[in-house]
Length: 527
Image (cartoon, rainbow, N blue to C red; front, side, top):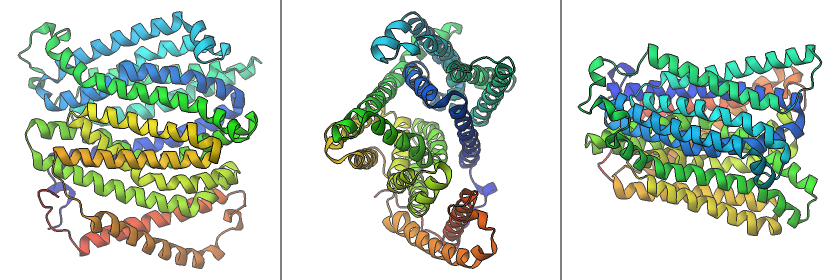
C-alpha cells in the first residue's frame, strides 16, 4: 500500500524533513560558497589563496580534535539518552571548549615554529594567530549542533550554515569596499578574517537559538537523576570521550594524511617529469576545479548521513533491530540511486562543465573520470555514519586509515610512473575498498536487505531510459533556444545546466513511476 507523508511514523517524517532541510541548506551554502571562492580568487589572487589554503589545514586539525568528534559523539549519545540531553550536552561542551582553548593558546604561541618548520612558509605566521581565535567558536557551534541532531531537531544546524555563509560574505564584501575606498592593500588576512567572522556568526546564531528555542519539547526532557555537578561528572564525560576519541583519531588522521597528500602529489608529479609549475597547475585543476563539482551533489548524502547516526543510535538503544535494518537498506538504496545518476551526469556533461565554467578542457576530463567515484563515495559516507551510530567507531577508524593509506600508496609509487592517472585510480580504489569494507562490517552487526535488481539494475536501466528521452527531447528543443546557450558560447553553462536538470527530473520521474507501478514486496529480515 502506498504511504503518504502524513501516514509515515513520526520518526520517518522527522528523518525525511530533516534530510530535505539539510539538503536544501547544504545546496544553498555550496552555491554561495562557490561565488565566494570566485570573489576571493579575484580579490587576493592565486598566491593569496595558496597561503590561505596552507593555514586552513591547521584549523582542520584543531576542529578534528576538539569539535567535530565531540559533535558526533554528542549526537549519538543524546539520541540514546534524550531525557538526559541537557546534562550530556553540558559535559560535551565542557570537554570541547577546554580542548579548543588549549589548542588556540598553543597555536597562537607557537605560530612562528608552525609556519617555518611545519608549513614551510614563514608568511603564514600572522594568519595562524587569527585562525586560532576561531577554534573556540567552532567548538561551541559544533556542540550545539550535535545536541540538536541528537534530539532529532535539524532546523537550527541547517539554518546556522546559511547564517554563517551570508554573514561571512556580507562582512568580507563590506571590508573590501572600505579598504578600496581608503586605498589600502588587500591581503590574505581578508580570507582569514572572513573565516573568523563566519565562525563567530554561526556560534552566535546557534547559541541564540539554544536559549530561545531549546530542542527539548518539554521541561521534563531536561530532568535527570544525576546531580547538578554532572557538568563535570565522569558519568557523562567518560562515555562521551569513549565515543569521541576514536572519532578524533579518525578525523585527525584524515586531516594529516590529506595534508601529506597535498605536499606529496606535486613532488611526485615532478618525479614523473613535470616542472614544479606544471605539477602545481595540474593538482590545482584537479582539486580546485574538478573535485568541487564531484562533491557538490554529496550535500544530499551528507545530510542523510548526519541524520542517520542519531536515528540508528536511538534504534539500537531501544533494541529495534528492524529499524536498524530498514535504515541500512534505505541508505544502500538511495546512495546508489544518487551515485548512479551523478556518474551518468558527470560522464555525459563533465567535459562541457569543465570548459564552460573554468575554460579548462583538463578539468572536464577529470570530472568525467571522477564521476565513477560517486556511487562508492556516497555509500561510504552513509554506511560509515550508520557504523558510528551503532557504536562501531573503532571499525570506521581502522577502515578509513587503511583506505587513506591505500590512496597514498598510489601517490608515492604510482604517480612517478603513470602521472595523475595513478592518483585517479587510487581515489577510485580507496573509495571502493572503503565502501565494501563498511558493507561487510555492517553485515556482521545487523541484518539488512540487498536486492541487486532494485538497487543496481533498476537505477541503471532507468538512467539509460532517462538519457535517451532527454537526448530526444533536446534534439527537438535545441534549435529553438538562443545560440548563446550552445557549447562554447558565453552562456554555455546554463545550457548544460538545463540538460542536467531535465535528465535528473526524468530519472526521478521514472523512479517514482516504477515505484508506483511495481510496488516492492516487504523486505526480508536478513540477506
